[in-house]
Length: 330
Image (tube, rainbow, N blue to C red):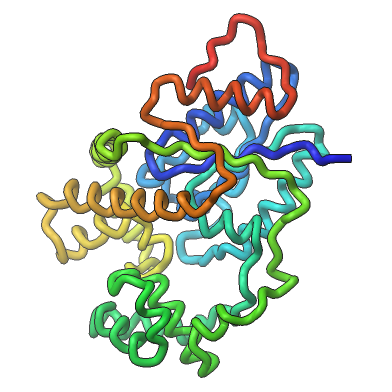
């Protein structure tokens, strides 16, 4: 028996993924089916990071169950491998409850881990990681990137010098094992770190025809986040006393720029421009990754009809009955 398809909604930041997922869930409910959303977002996992992650609010989460949101403290690390295990388990559990799982998000390394598996890598070494963070505070990440280029030129070539999280991980692997990360990646994938190949995922990707449309959305959203109190949110996080700029949570786009402002490394007057620029870079990386996913169904998120088209296609794919007189919009 062919398994029922599982809808995934992906796309760059600010492309409207959450709104479309909620609209699809609403239309499924109208046809007598329940949906539950499995978040595929590496920032939404952290408690206390609400404004800068555009985290779904209480009303949205009450209307449709959301998973993998607020599951980690910002002091903790959450990996792609952990996501793959959690998401695969949740999809199975949601289906067993007779509901429809919707995988929604833009962290595409998580998608790769879920559907293809990952190479087996050594576990994190907190002592080595903290030593690297201390060195970065003293010497800067560019210096550590230069060190990586000497010991693992293949990995350094694909990482930007300011990509602190990945530079740190590559050096951590080298220092902990004496083996460069590129050598680990060339090994065969572990069966333990497998993709969830038994699930029939159908991927809808929201991508702009005109990049300027997405840039305008990014700018408007980051401006709204500042108006909603993003700086105060990061001030509250800093006041905890157990966070620092090198944690994955504080390297999230937006949080990193606000943290630098509060630390005096950049003026407040440039915060909007820096936040928008960083978010645009994130969107560019996401779009590059999406172009490497040939099986995705692309919908132009800057087309006013695209959200309705996504809902209609998904309902048809799932065999759901469309409610009478319901506008297919989101």
